[in-house]
Length: 350
Image (tube, one colour):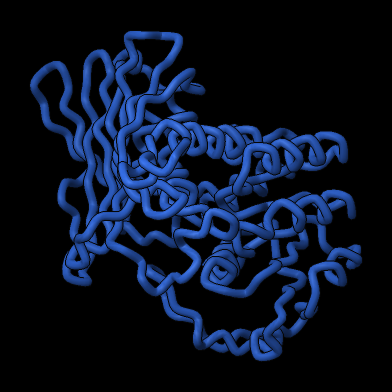
């Protein structure tokens, strides 16, 4: 049984808690939080954009710490799950790895490529695994797309288009702070950057056009270049003034003999399946496979199950590895650098 210590009891800590309860071979052995009510099991004020609201949880048999450092001294903990704000990821992960723990870190792995590299190197030197919480590949539509691509029945990849767009999250005061959250690319587009890296390999170049808000890119569209110049891959991501449509994501993936398409949105506070996962094949057929009940919490259960498999086998996860997460952050940074400054800012440049 793998013992887990959750560092940070907020929305993601709550969702991970639920996932651990559903997956065999792993259990929450400890939590750490600065909030005494959370350490006492009162999680009723936790809310998020999916899943059930928080509730009072039974922490019998679960140790509660007020500091991460104290939790890291507990020998019953094999894996530390970092559900902390992004700017704290790197140093917390380095401490956990130095204490002999495996690390599961929520996305983005860190806010800079340098910090991501430090984390990956530290895990390698410690002989421990570093997992990143890139759960998107476990959502049923994305998982099915991965399966179809890997199967190869419809031929090789030709390209694709990915989008992830939200309304302005005015309730998140640090969202546009490059030193704490990183802005829309690192908080939002990093999901698709990771998925693009997973499907197509690491791009060699990016061409981006977008708008900035302060020091970060607010919205952009990007074309990714690859060594295989026949691949045509693009993405749109960020924040636009669409408060009636809080969120939308989807893809169109091109194979030699098929196209895969999917789109979902939250419109007027209600989730709407704009287009269910659809396969258009070269025989003219339109196929819509059954992909389950659509509960997003199932994806987190699959993510945790992947971590259990990886730890049990001793082999790095081909989906959740720190190397892939580092590359996803590098892609986001490449796009940040590719978007020119706002016109008024360029006038002030020497």
